[in-house]
Length: 156
Image (cartoon, rainbow, N blue to C red; front, side, top):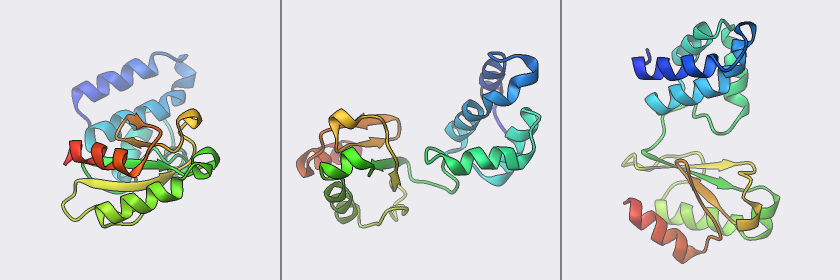
């Protein structure tokens, strides 16, 4: 279900903990699995649970709590818009509205061509650069409509 490379990476994460604490590698293992597959299906989460000697529900609890895990298929680029307090106070609602209009989708949706998924997330710890969003694993701060269009244009 995972490549040898991903299994080796998970093995390195597990090795960071005492043998009776390998469950501590669950978040890293989920990231690795998601990096390979793009999202976390139930069978994939079950597989991660087996690797870590956990019950499936223990893995589901982690994956459903954090917004960084995708529990359904997503576009090639995932745009995670912070709507927490600092971003909201500096215009996150305008960022969301601009993205929705530009992409023709709403929060939680993926464009018809499969290029972009738009997600609302809690704090991404970049309050000094609010409003901001993360595309895939790259932060973009101090957003304006022009800056958003420039960033999206570089990805289209």
